[in-house]
Image 1: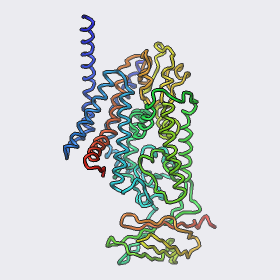
Image 2 (image 1 turned 180 degrees about the vertical axis):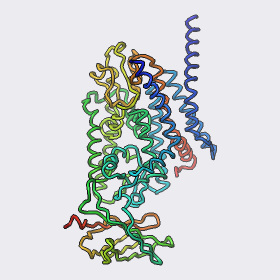
Image 3 (image 1 turned 120 degrees about the vertical axis):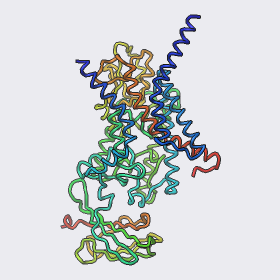
Image 4 (image 1 turned 30 degrees about the vertical axis):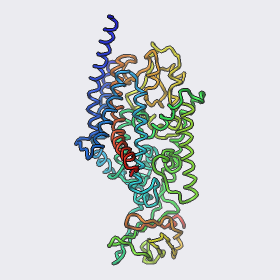
Amino acid sequence: MKKLTAIPAYLWAIVCLLIIPVCFIKNDTFANEMAKLPFMKLHPVYSGGDQAKIITDPELVTTIYKPVFESLFGKSKTGFVQLKFSSPSDTLPLIIKRDIDYNSDNAVDFGIEINTQTGDTKLTPVNTLVRNINISSKVKKNWVVRVNVTNPVKSK
Amino acid sequence: MKTIRENSFSTTGKIGKSLLLLLPMTFLILLFTAGPTPSFNSKVSLVAFLITFIFFNVLFFMILYKGKVDRYRATGFIVLALFFALTFIVDLIGMRGTMTFSHETMLSCEIPFCHIVTTMVILPLIFTGSIIFPGSIIGGFASIASMLVIVIGVMLALGRGFCSWGCFYGGWDDGTSRILRKPVIKKINPAFRWASFAVLIIVAITSALVLEPTYCDWLCPFKTVTEFEKVTSFTVLLKTITFVSLFAALVIVLPLLTKKRIQCTTLCPMGALCSLSNKINVFEVRIDKGKCTECMLCTKVCPTMSLEKQDVEKGKPSITCMKCGKCIDSCSKSAINYHIKGTPVGKRVTLARMLFLYPAFTLLVVFTAGNMQQGIVLLVKLFTTGSLL
């Protein structure tokens, strides 16, 4: 019986001998395969959520993301809407001023004004669900703003 | 005269045997030091390669020749921690101009994923099907997928051996715990060895609830020697004070006074997760009860308090064992050895030892080789130009 258990034990030990070098030599291959798994994606809290619409103007491209109300179980009472401003010429205008309709009801929900030199960001809520600025920061050649909003479903 | 000749023959034989066993490792050291297609763009990088190559060959030769593991393992392990911190910080400053990260770094999801984060992403992964970390899934430096492959592989192959042979932070408290010859604080409640499990449960649950890696955010002491959030608010200041204090207490002062790896034993959630992987890992440390005289020296030297009197009586350390080899080296009766589960205790000891040492030392080489070479180049640059950048 002891010999029977010893054979797979030694075999498994030899496999372990190979696992370490293979893990590093073939790391790119394994990592690429792992990245294809359905759960290997960033949580919307980090990715900013899915894109809802892109508005293209001559000097500014505005990307509005779907509101993120994620929690561990179901949806939370509050969340955020991410906006990304980029310029076709790679140079952001000094002042970015836009009216945003984040829930696609054809009504302005808030106005936003950003001074890209100083980072000063002013929020003008129109919709009562709009709360305050969460983050406003330059990200590479773009400007990203997250505006805290209340979940309309949970606020009822 | 005869005895001297016999001794010299046995020494020659021992050297020959050690050199023979070193050969496969020399090949692996060469592979992971020079890379599959070696290219040295300067004399300094060639010298750095040679120093690293010789360093690891000497370390493994000494492990084989002297029959001692821990002293030589620790040398490589401390070198890993120091060079990792040096190269990481210099790279960061080169890239960002600072050791701090900002909203910009987080929004662009460019924070390197370290193995400890694994403990915090598991529950959210199960419940939300996504990763709660501002890093990149693939590509770039220390991507999430790449690091998870390494974590899974190492836990399968070595269990908690990861903490003594591959963790690029562990060398800090391993190093400080070796500074004094004798401990100042001799009595520590062995129940503390379970503290990291409590930390694991707490950070896993809190991270899932707030969808943020709470240990990284608030507690990780090693942010002191890698990267940390830019202080822009009172909360961030509080976080900074917390992790710097933990670094000072658990990585410097307490290991120094107790000669134990206090941070790894009591705080690190990854240590607890790796301990659980010891259950499925084939390698373990066992005590041959036929040889053991119960002198309890092993219980005194164990850096993680994994060997207590009741463990010696049972013939094996608790699951928190890091397989560092300190107890094995301390035993004058050679009663403690690496062992392969499912095989008889005390039999084929050398085979079990070699089957463990090859993958474990390879892990040390893989993590250290690149950092050490880059570190040597940086130090040469510092001495010749006065700048690391």
